[in-house]
Length: 317
Image 1 (cartoon, rainbow, N blue to C red):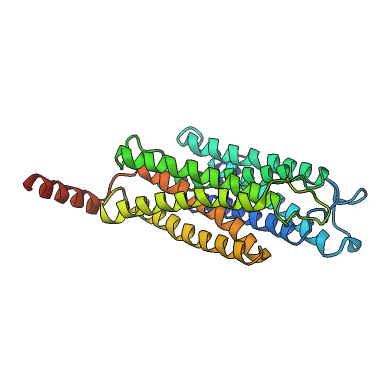
Image 2: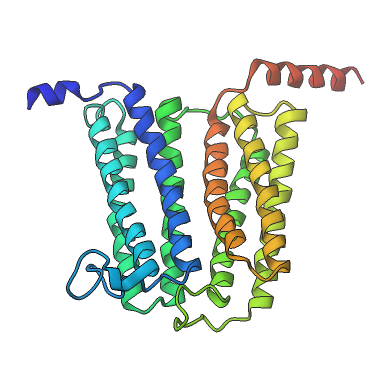
């Protein structure tokens, strides 16, 4: 036992970084597989929970393709649990020096069985669209947790100060808030549409056409905020290199996400486009959360030089 304890990392070495990356990637991946369950009409491929059938924990030949899809998504939950246990074990020796890693890994690990229970309630309520929406929302929150965990593993404990001015921090706060609204509106829009996960599943009864607009408006606000922050990072030298990279990544994903959203709205919600849209939303959450975290990083030497140059130009004029 002592040998095992001594084998566990005491610093954030390569093993810890791999586990943190695996945590984030797996949280995004299960959104993709969950989307596949819904979009292939396999939501009740395993018609009960926690068993797959009344007599079996695993899918049977009689359940066919839908049973395989639904059971495969359930199996991925166990992969997430294994990754969470490994991540928690890898930070256990560092719990005093790096308590934030301990808390984040514990919170992420506890969220996974919570997610599994909501998934079970989804099946037991015959794919109630509001429960399905809650299932996706918790997944998005866990993606955010995993992004924070990965960032802390890579960059260390939180900086005491800020690397960007207060107006930029306000824009960042507005960005995460509007993105949250956009995600919620997207969930409600999907809950009113045709992809219920099963032909007999209920819809939320809301107006799909109207919800598409309610979903699009905050999405365009997100685009405006991301464009503004990206311009400040690149042309005004605001923030660190990490901030520049993460907010630029947010811009790229936002543009692709809006393009996919427009495509699916205009071409009858093709299942592949809807699935990509769901996964990209999770990727965008990860990028935006990382961008907010990088606001505490010290400004780059290049950015500081640009700011000083602007200050000299302003004072001379």
